[in-house]
Length: 100
Image 1: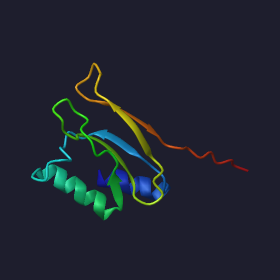
Image 2 (image 1 turned 90 degrees about the vertical axis):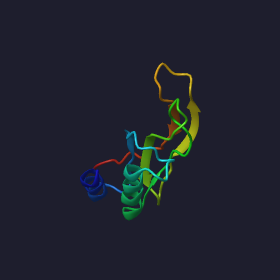
Image 3 (image 1 turned 135 degrees about the vertical axis):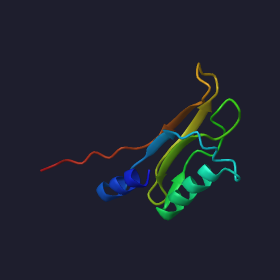
């Protein structure tokens, strides 16, 4: 994931990574989640989702974005899904750049 983050940061300041990492963000004892949290901190990124996204009531679906300039607005989480994951609804304003 470090390579992906590096590539994105070299191209733009405004990006979002949406991933089913299956790392329990809410488990402080999870070594994998701790490594991922450290990677986010080192790159000035944040995990935007802070509520359970799995039927077992854990945060395993991640929305990663830069801390500064983050304009993602989480709207809702719907647990009524055919999946064992919740449906996350968010708004992320996109800016169109006109080329000359």
